[in-house]
Length: 538
Image 1 (spheres, rainbow, N blue to C red):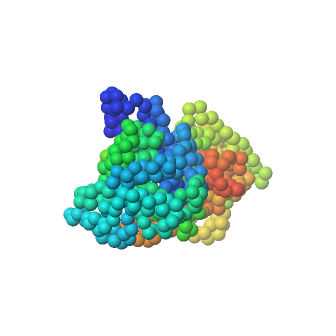
Image 2: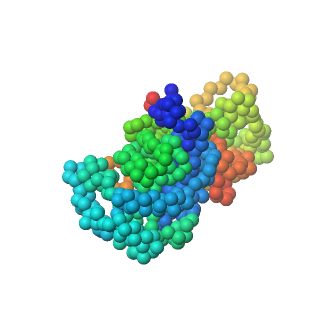
Image 3: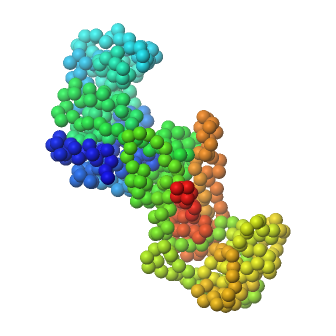
């Protein structure tokens, strides 16, 4: 069953109101895209694909103070990675059209140049229950507004001294219609236009014109723009654009414990809490990609949460569940020990070396096997051995047995160091207990992973959410999770030294990891843990 946007498109096509479906994704190049943008990308691209149309990537680059080419390039890379194909457009290329549209409004008596300060304008705007007050310049002669607007364009007016306002209705119940500013003076260098322009359109004026120039059939926005739709329609009507597009709103994506504000994401970058916009803890598309998320998992997530008309919050585990399901079926298995403890097999020769077989991925069809090597000394997780075990402990204890994954059952005969901090575990390999060939009848309660003496040192990064679960404190800084990144000096199978950047693995009993795409050496990022808390609660 389709969503309400599809129902609208179906009706428009059936009635002949539209012949070609053209959507757009219009980001501002003032930061990196985050997971919330992915929902909009998937929706707009999905609608275009379903109806044989196209989706434009259009940069709404109308604020030169905050925009950079770095953000432009990152956005292009992100949307392509998510599956978008199409043409790239820039709102700044339409500045001449926008300027002429503003002149047309002045000539029609529907716009005027004003010199009231921002504080005065705020006071005169009124409230939801009281009408606003008209500016003394509201009935400024058309010729005078035209001349002043040209002075603004030609750089003869200081920033903030004059603005161009639409002349609509200061008593409108919709605050957005109370003579909004549509142009302001900004003498700043534009990342594409250079110093050509000294006046820049406001978003509410520029956006509908951008859609009209590109012949957008369905302008799909998030719900916060619902109250702006009357102004959207007014601009298109009064600027006399033929076949004006229509705006439709859907609920934006909100995920628990996830920062969905570019302002706060920028704050984290600027203040050095994270290493950059692509830090794997960041919910940016670049950060998720570097952490090991796949475009297909993100698309699946966006499809599952659906398109609604009312805002709601999605549990953080839903996105994790999508990547976990995918990697469970696709990721090769490997062994990594994050807190190594030596284990010595005392009853084998010093040069003991036996080749064993383990599965590559038991969940994959024709997953296959690979070879691993057991040596006299191996390394196990420190918490897989206990001198004084807690209740229901099922791993290795003194005089106890455990199976080394895909190898043999071993029995602990002693340890070195203290009970609180053992430095080495001594065991005996029990003959006849080789995995796949065991007829000993010995029952063990636990199977633990290990790496041999040829294991490689690796930096393993364990990531958690940037925000703590408790959201009762309104102070953003107080909600930051100090344990969002924990680094481990681990030992990994030597085969992982040949892994490719961004290649993903399931580290047995640890979670899903991918090799970092930027760092030199062996650095692995935890994508997600093995436990699916979201589905467990369902």
